[in-house]
Structures are given as structure tokens and as C-alpha cells.
Length: 221
Image (cartoon, rainbow, N blue to C red):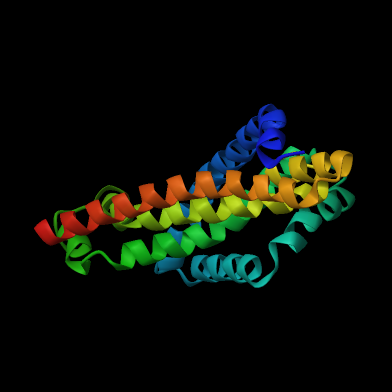
């Protein structure tokens, strides 16, 4: 079968798989952002206990392969707790925890990039540390973090391919299933690569434009 014919024939199933891939990525980044902000703030806090908890979490997640984390959440956690998880639940939990560790470092870097004078000025006006951080420092830091957060979105989207090992029918799993049925290995994986390239190229373009805007705003400031 010709490449184009194969592409057209399986277009609906790939669009469905692409939708699932993007959904998983969006949910994972949403929860990962919440986790990342919390642990990022803990990492820059003056409380040694909070710093240690944050450092431990980041060390564990960044120091272990994502595939091991997927297996641990999907197979190990239910055995330890008795709570069964669907493939989707396990996938989103794992991807959220994984992204959260990297976002925590992005948050830390973003906060540390802000002039310390901003915090000092807010404190001098009578704002407590936590309120000054949330209302003055963090909003400014988020703007500088945007390019890195979009890059993390790209990384997480690519990492969703590993969820095929537990049966989540995202792009890679969809390619595996179709290849098993028609044996069009080279053409089919070429099609899978094209779908990834299209989405990631669009996201990269967005990241570059956001980074350019952030750089311009810094120069004006």
C-alpha cells in the first residue's frame, strides 16, 4: 500500500489517538503545574524541612527513568494500597508527578531570576513573606517561565509515548496496533513520526514567539 493511501486510511484513528495524547498532556501539565509551583515555592522557602521535602521529591523523580515510574504507579501502587487504577489514571498521575518535578525547578529558576529588591520592597510595605511571594514575585516570575513551560509541554507530549506499555491508546500505541494488523512497519512508523513532528513543530514555534516577546519586554523594562 502506498504511503499516502495508508495515511488517509488510518487518518481517523490517528486523529482520535492524537486527541487522547493531547488530553493526557494537558491534564498532566495542569496537575504538574500545581505540583511544580507548590514544590518550587517549598524549594525557595526559608524553611529547611520544606526545602528537604522538595529536594527529595525532585531527586527521586529526576533520578529515576519515567518508564520505571509508570510501572511503579500502574503495577506497584495498586499492590501496595489495594486501589486499582485505570491506564488513564495511572498515566496522568505518573506524567503529572514527573512534569511537576521539572516544573518545580523552572519555578525556582523563575523566582530567583526576579530582582530581590522586589521582595524587599513588598516586605517594606508591610506584606508578609507568603503574600509578597504570591502577589508580587510569582506573577513576574511566571512571565519569564512561559518559554520553559511550553518546552516542558513538548517534552511531556513526547513522553506520553511510553504510556503505550500499559495500554494507553495514544499515538504510539495506535501505531503499534495498526502495524500488528497490516505489517506496514516502516510506513506506519513514518506516519506516527509525522504526527509528532507536526504537533511539536507548532509548539516549538509558539515557544520561540513567546520567548521573543518575553525577551523584548525585559529589554523595555
